[in-house]
Amino acid sequence: MSRRRIRRAALAYSGGLDTSIIVHWLKANYGCEVVCYCSDVGQGTELQGLEARARALGAAEVVVEDLRVPFLTDFAFPALRAGAVYEGKYLLGTSLARPLIASRQVECAERTGCDALAHGCTGKGNDQVRFELTYQALAPQLPVIAPWREWDIVSREDALEYAARHGIEVPAKKGDLYSRDGNLWHLSHEGGPLEDPGTPAPEEMFRLTGARAGRPASAERVKISFEAGRPVGLDGVAFDPVSLVTRLNTLAGRHGVGRADLVESRVVGMKSRGVYETPAGTVLIEALEDLCRLTLPHDVLRTRAELAPRMADLIYSGLWFSPLRRSLQAFVDTALEAATGEVTVELFQGHADAIARTSPLSLYRSDLASFDMTGYDSRDAEGFIRLFGMPLATVARRGGPVAPASSGSTRV
Image (cartoon, rainbow, N blue to C red; front, side):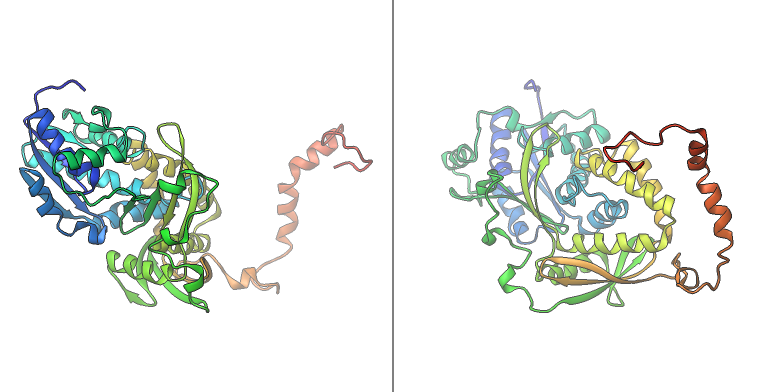
């Protein structure tokens, strides 16, 4: 972007290497004040000392918000209800956090009198798209500064050298192998040896999920309670969203549940490899899908399944605030009004398997499903089969081939 006059910029600040040097760079290159905005979405110890570090870097103001509850209730749980899993494996932990952070950054900018927004996303990644699409949806009038698309820094080593040259203390050191992003929903790993898809992820890299050798020798079961598709309790005890996910992360994590290693399709057009740890999310997906099969009619279940990849694509691409995402969510929320009940999930050696389920709104009737003929007049099946098979009979009576010729003599 052209170097227009900026008086005050709101920076999405994480306290990491990139955003630490960006505070200095913005002041030096735009001559503006910098408001550092940081959201707590469950990063844990990463937030320790963050405000003090930002002020030491020269931030005019530092805003830190605890967004753990809205992150789960307004972003992660809606995606869970939608069954949104990107390319069959990724549970969208980073993708879900970015629109929340960006939306609150916009609010912070307006509240603190900023006339620009800034972020530390690279020009190759997905996050630049997620942040800036949110900006466009909520504050299209504010210009965006993306230093990675302007400066001459091209690598992590360059960024570390910039920090050293200007006396900026940063948490990253040379030799750090991985780029990580963590929140209550997941922990992601990229870079280092993972940039070779043919190299298995090193066991010592994982932080949330236990190594095979240290996992419990026997299975463990947990009963998860849902109300209209929202997780509300564990083993008969009600929990708030943060406590529920935190406890389930610990429980499932020690069994090694929730690892996903995949080469995915980035929004910007390239393939990249990511390794994700999502213990609680993996268990909740397994449980809720099982409960939906018990409580939803087939056509609703099937339609939700058809829309789930579309929802995942929208979330991954940063289109959380789009009219289409909101419209699909309205369908999902209505469809899952009946998804109330309890599901027992067994955890063992990296697997989470639903093994029992109950619901006051169950569509399962034992008198209809049992092998004895009570509660059902089998004579009704004759007319049903005749009507259901009418198209087949019509084709047969017409004559001619019913399928392409095969090499054998039997007509298929």
